[in-house]
Image (cartoon, rainbow, N blue to C red):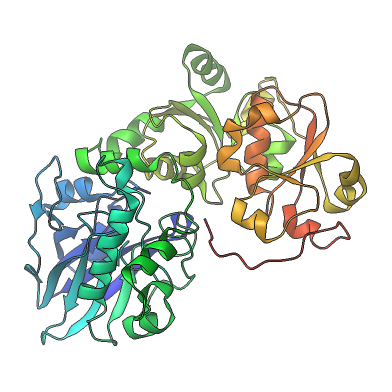
Length: 469
């Protein structure tokens, strides 16, 4: 069967391209749809359907733009109520893609409209299942997201639905089927996903904790809900965009790719409430940045951390990027619904410096310097609680990055302190936010805990984590 996984690591997302006899289908596309159209063009194929496994929370899907540009029909599973033209399929309804067949299996639990698509080849033999967030490799979808959009749902009710879906719809299927999930490790849609992005269903039945055949419903619900943390704040907003619709990415790009010289950039920043977002790496940012800007490096989980740290999805944004990466930044912002970039600094930070504009800096120290200083300073670990509980510097205080805005009152302004994360990416985000809010009495550890662990700094005994959230 001709099916390809199109994986985007920065948001741990998998879309799928299915083609047969000049017809194609896309499953769970990202916001930028050009690559899918180009892929179909390579096969001289027409995209016939856009299949959505559910209303996604962690990204804005490209279903509307893809349908508008290709004439494809959008398909959801039973109970979905989109605010645009789409086929809301019935359970077991079938769709033809050339000589292939896609069969709808309604599998509520992650959300109520969650659907798995069974793929049948030209002989009618089952090949695989596109599972969305119902079944991951090593995990299943968390059942606490839809309740933030639909008031009368509870995570316990959704977990019960997921138990039934897995037992009645997924586990009876043949072991040889290939599981094609919507996410891999790093996504916040599950708590301990594998780094592998496909597997056989038979192997998942043997190794996935949620598919143990001897589990009772009560045991499943308890185990599934254990280790969950508060979902990222942007998740419900992305769900609503996926249900209600959104601006075309073409419009978002036209607005965002507004090149500004330093004077125009400064003027627009002063005239609006735009946030200055610097997407360079931590070292480059620390060495010189525009005052009051924050740093979220594009070479990391950029979109996820934008969604976590910028609370207003309507926030106007002015970009500072490496030259040539402006469009990439606007697209990656749009993946999580941040559509209001209004311009970028032409020529990057170098043009700002050459124009004689003010530049700020942040102090960083290496792990060996930290080894000498840490005993006499407050140490703040901004990693996730699960990482901190697993192993940390003795005496460190844990304030996870995504919670730092809630705990600003606990961070002193009159006592020196040190920040660290796993490798320096998240601690620089934290450092830039604290600097913007008026703190200056701190330093950041280059290389984070990964470098600290190589020194003699006392660390707690390692405990294997039970969740990756």
